[in-house]
Image (cartoon, rainbow, N blue to C red; front, side, top):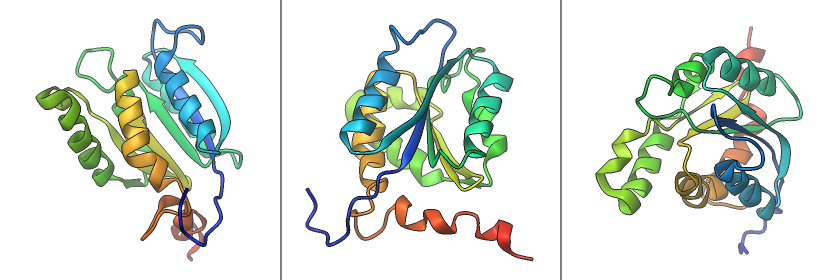
Length: 178
C-alpha cells in the first residue's frame, strides 16, 4: 500500500499472446499477466491469442488502440530472432512515440535474472492512439519481470514522482492541435 494521498485509478488492459501453439488452456504467460493485472486492481479489457503473423498482430493491437475500452495493450511472445518472431515488426509501425526507456529498464531487470541471455529479446514499448503498448517476450518469467519491475508501478497513479496514468489524458494532445 502506498502512503500517497492519491487514490488508485484502475486502467483497462488488453493482453495479447502471440503464438502458433498456445491456447487459453496452456497460455502460462498470458495467465501470468492477467493474474498480475487483476491482482493490482486493474481491469482486463480483453484477451486474445493470435498466431505469429504480422498482419494478425497488427490488426488486433490497432483495433484495441482505437477502442475507448482499452488504455494499455501488453503483448507476450514473438520478440526473439527466429523467422517466426515478428511482434516488434508488426507493432512498431503503429508507434507514434517509442518508449526506449522501457526496453532499457526491462533488459537491466532481465540481466539480473538471466544474464547475457537478455539480449535475445527485442522487448519494446510505445504509444499509439493514446494507448500504451508493451511488447514482452513469451516466457512467464519475462512477463513477471516486466510487470513486477516496471508496469505495476508505472500503471499505478499513486507512484511518485511520476507514472503513466497521470499523463494518459494528454497522450493525444498532438492530435488535437491545429
